Image (cartoon, rainbow, N blue to C red):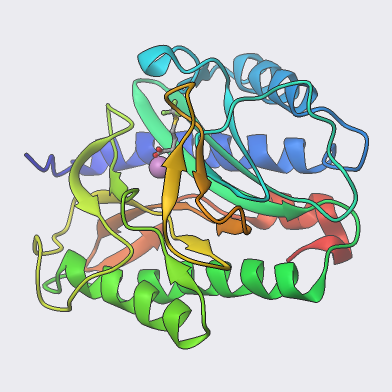
Length: 260
Ligand code: MF3
Ligand code: CO
């Protein structure tokens, strides 16, 4: 069941999305070699709470953090831990905040210090594919058009698309219908309508598309242990177009010339 949001609800979706974007902007200031991912998690949790938000991932189906931490071969849903970030790592940081009953969800993959050109290219392509998906998100078109735009863009450049994990609708719950895959045929899936709120979140691998879930039941990594990148925006379809509710502007401000 796809819940179409009223204009009043979209105002709340926008506010939650700005808060999650500001949270990632705050976290971005601290991403550096020598920092533990648990430290980043604490910074995010305190920032959300200080700003009236609720860390929506924390305790969600038992998830143990405010942030999902995705170092190198981790695709999604890694736990914050005492792992210390190292120069050359990439780290995806994915999080959701609930504000006034509505959720905002965003993810950004950061470079830790200097990274290899190969990893930089993976991150750039993944981020660009998110915007290709957004461009394909038009009223009257279908979810498959978004999926196909992401897939085509990444596969043309030699990367592979994770199949098992998808984007999703969002609203009062962090995961609502419809599923928003990153692969598939154009012209299939639900029709895109005014009032829809969705998260587009390409998860793109350097090597093969296959994944493994670790014994903790959450951490998803590439089977070949090659790197994976992940970017995500929350988007509202209103006034006949896709409005990107989250923004990477706060991250960009924090990172300056280290922005991918
Ligand atoms: N953006 C992630 C997702 O849609 C957020 C997951 S929060 C978690 O899967 F708690 F489920 F990990
Ligand atoms: Co999401």
